[in-house]
Image (cartoon, rainbow, N blue to C red; front, top):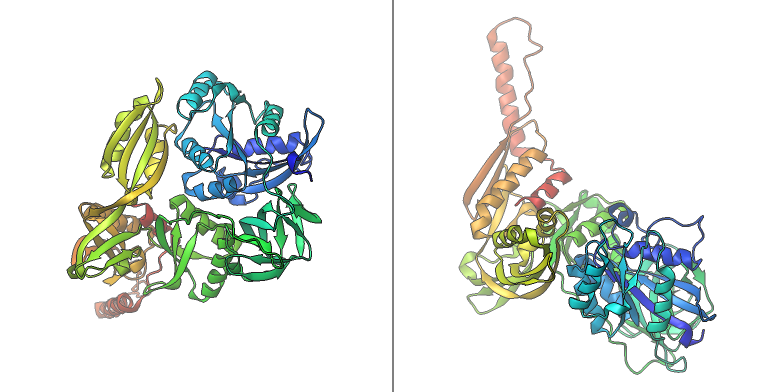
Length: 598
């Protein structure tokens, strides 16, 4: 197709501002999907996305649109996630586009992730089209939101498009703005092939399906291609686009977005951000690709049944195809056996990965308490990065421990400022600034340890502000801290799945909270279970789960009391033996309870 008639754009916004609904309306308006085939959140093809009402994966779709000028245009739309944990998905989408629709909720206004996504887009020099969505709501404040877009985001308020994705208002204006304001893609068909891999997935029959955006050259079925990171050569088996169903095409040319299959069976051979080129006439250099992601949260993932380890290994490798921000390495636990130490961008990211592994690959998993990466300066001058409590060196070897800090940007209604300051202070935050965005909202900036942010800080913000607060954060630096290793003992044995590194002043309350939660969630056994929280050799909290009582003398009718005593003694000896050798069955809910304990 003529390159001047192609437009590549993405939709970016804060979570729940209506990105997926707007994508639905665009698909309906352009006739890309029939009424019979349509369902809400069409591009969110995971059950998990529909259940939670959030976008987890970026989705690309080709749309043919006849504009007001009478010409037929090819629009490549990429719908993106809005939660802070999925920023990497947004950055991948932005790198494959020339422009973006920045959607802002008319009732909630500009929020933290709106600002973060705008900066991401501006780093890539994208053309920004601001859209105020949900103008049909009774509490919509259109003029205030328009002013926020001008004051906070620095965009021209006269260029704002008003829309209601739910009712379909403003859809045509948005499409016309895409055509008029977003430039066609650069590059030439005659140049050597350069295609950016921005996503991939695994298909049982086709192998790895590679999603790419062509920056230069042309791709066709049967040609030999090479991935520039590992110099592997493949033959293209299938070329296609999503409209939104898979549709085979003969060729993909410069500026277009589509997919290819090459019968690649090993998931690890494909890298997100890699460059695909012609094996016979390769490009001189690869495309810039993506900035390397640094996981913020680490946790262990183990199969509930140790025999499922090979299946878990295969599942994790396939999942990483569609989620390049997820990293992992094998590890062994004394209590859980073989598993993987996994790195995530945040706690929601961790929950989503675990849910996908269980649903898509039919696995039963155990997830350990999450932790951040601590930097340990040892007395011999060496520096060690610790992401697992079991790897913490002996106290005698440690000179100093540093923990990661983030700069948190909290947007809050004016009436919740006091409660928000109190919450941030309770999480060991250092106050930086307060900025009033308008008469009703303020932005509070705090430097907070990452370990205080990852578990339930976002949930607490939503609770304190009755749903109107929002959070964005960026990595700042490492600062000295005083941490200790908190162990949880079950019947005298350290259960390393519950071990965690905590701030010393919080160790008692954290240890007490964990064992109280475990007492509630671990079912009673035929023997007594003693739960203890300890720092080093010192027990700081204890709870006991009583044994299930069994009336062993119920069958005795009359006779001498010695008969009953003999049975009681036998039962007592049996319970003692069971306590010594009996295995405590710990349900999955216990791990989640320990995870959330504060």
